[in-house]
Image 1: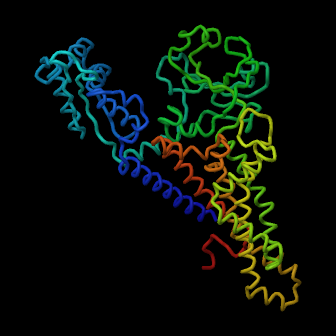
Image 2 (image 1 turned 90 degrees about the vertical axis):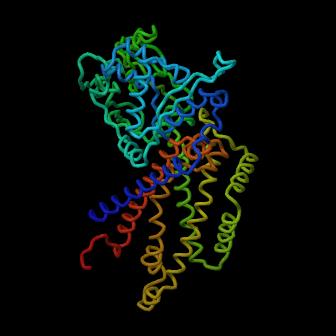
Image 3 (image 1 turned 30 degrees about the vertical axis):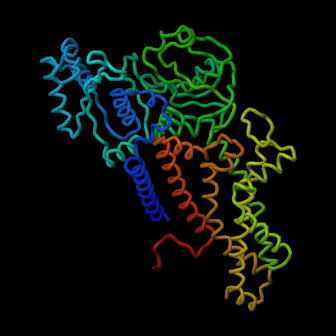
Length: 523
C-alpha cells in the first residue's frame, strides 16, 4: 500500500507540474499579451513614449518579462557602492536623443547597454517626442530600458519554489532590536489575563507565529504561508490562497487590548499583525495602540471565506444527494420497470436533457414563489438563503447517483455469480446485501472523495445565479480580466484536489473490495 501511494503521489505531482506548465504556455506564449490592457483605463490615457514604457512595466508585473530602466541600473550601482550619489545624479539625465548625451551619460549608457545585452536583454531607447521642435508632447519624454522574456523553465522554478514560505527571525532586514521567538501562556492579545498559548516573534514578518482562539480550527499558525500567485486585477496585490480563505462580510467588533494597554471595541485582529518598516510613528493612531512596527492587521468579519461558503453549500448538497440518490437508485434497480423505476428514469432524463442553467433558473423562480430568498446575503441570519443553492447543486447529483447505481446493480444482477448464489440456496435479500449492492457500490464509493473535495472549488453557474460569494466564480472572473496569477493559482489548486481525490478514491475502493490490492505479492 505504502509503495503504491508513494508512486501514485509521485505521478500526481508530475501531473500537477505538467498542468501548470501547459497553463503557463497558453497564457504567456499563445495568448496575445496586449489583452491585459483591454480594461485598463490608465493605459488608454497614456500617449507616445510613456505608453510604451507603461506597457513594459505592466508586462513585468504580469510575469511576461523582466524590465529594467536605466535609472534603476544607476540606483543599483549606487546601492552596491560602485558609484556615489554625485556620479549617479550626473549620469541619470540622458538626452532627448543620443547625440545630446553628456560624456558621463554616454559612458554609463554604454555600460548599461553592454551589461544587459550580455545577459540576453534587448535595449530599447525611445527618443523624445517634441511639439514644435522644443516642447515635449504629452507623454513624449525620452525612455531607456532593457527587457527580456522570462523563460518557461525559470518561470516554473520560481513559481513552485515560492509556493511555501517559512517565516523566520531574519525575514525583516530593518533594525528591529533583539531578534528571537518567545513562548507565552497568556496571550497579550487578550490582555495577558487569559490562558492562551502563543508563540511571538521579533524579526519575523508575522508577530504571532502560533496562537489559539475560539474560531475553527481553534489552533492557528503563521509560520508556513502558502502562495499560489498574486492577483493583478481580481483582488489586486492579494495572493490567490488568501483570496479564497479570507473571511468576508461585515466587520465584527469586540473588546481588543492593544500592546500599549489601550482597550476599545474594534474589529482589528491582532493575531494577524505583520511588520511595516517605520510605520509606528507615521500615525498618532498607531502610537496610541502599538509599541513596535507590527502595525498592519486584518479585520474580523462575520462571514465565511469564498472557499468556506462553497464548501458549506457543496458538502450539504453532497450529503443530501447521497442520502436521497443512493436509496432511490437501489429501489429503481430492485423494482426494475415498475412505477418507481419509471418515475426515477423520467427525472434522470429531465436533468440530463435540460441545460443546467435552465433548471437552476426554474428552481430559483419556483423558490421565489414559495417565499425563499433567491439572492445570497452574507450578513443575514436567515438560513433559508442556503436552501435554493443547495437544492440546485443536489438535484443533478441525485440524478447522477440514481442513474449509475441503477445501472451497476442491474449489471450485477445479471452476473453469473448471482445465478450460482441462487442455486446455492441463498435468499434474495442475502444475495442483494452481501453481493450485488457491495459490488455495485464500488464505483460509486470511488467518487466520494472527488465529490467532497470538489466542494472546495465551488459551482460556477449556481454561485453566479444566486450571487453566492464562493470560490466557483474566481477562475472565470480571472479569465475575463486576464489575471494570469489567479488563473495559474486556481488551476494548480484544482489539479492538486483532483490528484488527492483520485488517491483517496483508490484507498476507499481497496477498503471496500478485498479483491483490490495495491501490493505485488503473489504476482
